[in-house]
Length: 368
Image (tube, rainbow, N blue to C red; front, side):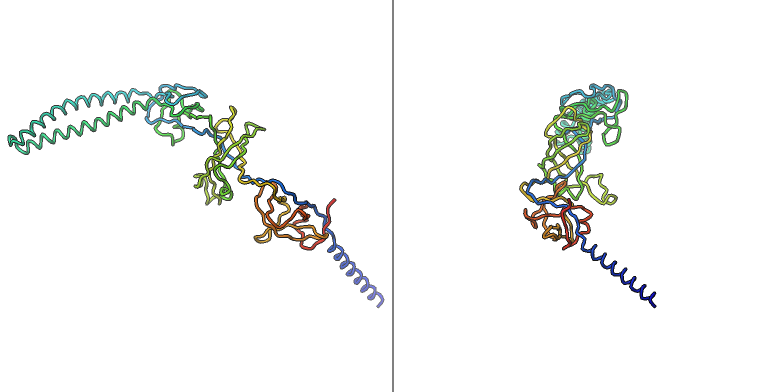
């Protein structure tokens, strides 16, 4: 009997100790990190990766098919608009011009004969000296010859244009960035097929960065926004830029079905140049979309979210008080607080592990 009583007492003591420990733990004061809100500056940026390209950059191809007879320039050579860049073998096209000139010369002789005959026949027909069928035959021969002469004139014009196209000229003032063909190789019409580009000419006096921004941030960017550009090949240097164009149409490379997100092309014009900058180099841009001064800011770690509302914990009288807030500009490290706090508040900003489990009314103390 005594043994049973002893066991019961021991069980009661264990239960009491368990309850006491839980009570002590429940009353444990959490150590937190705090920050007193100060007014300062905050900047909202959108980051973009891209490649440098000349503001004016032309891929030179051929409008006629033939063998490249002569390349007149070298890479990195300066050229003027109208300078001959290369020559496509012109013999075939020159022969066609000579052929058409001879044909038109013969056409003109026949045309003059038929014209005179037509004028005489018209006069005779009005005097009923020749039959209607005879007049119509002469008239038909004359008009057919006139049409043939006109048609051959168009062919001659086209032949001359093709001969002129054998002498490929620069359409801009610039610099030869690359030459992709050699003398003796065939030039194929057009530049849309890989390998058809003979050379690339660019005006490097103005450079742009071509990049893409995802659909979640594109609405923040507008033409005229300033940008800071960093180029991997120029480590330690920053270049000023300005948004030149924001496309309203997703890029052709965006596969929304596969990626789930559309990307929109953005062009940033560099406001300063450097001889080290070359088209094709990789560049990263920080586009400044908004900037405010004299506003309250807090680190992201301090901001919580409950449904659609944002909140912070304020240390007040040794306890955590939940305070709902309105946020504004979102910078890289901090967020603008539009309303909900004052400069007299003590905001709990960490540690993150404590904030994740912190509840309204819990006791807190400042971590030493």
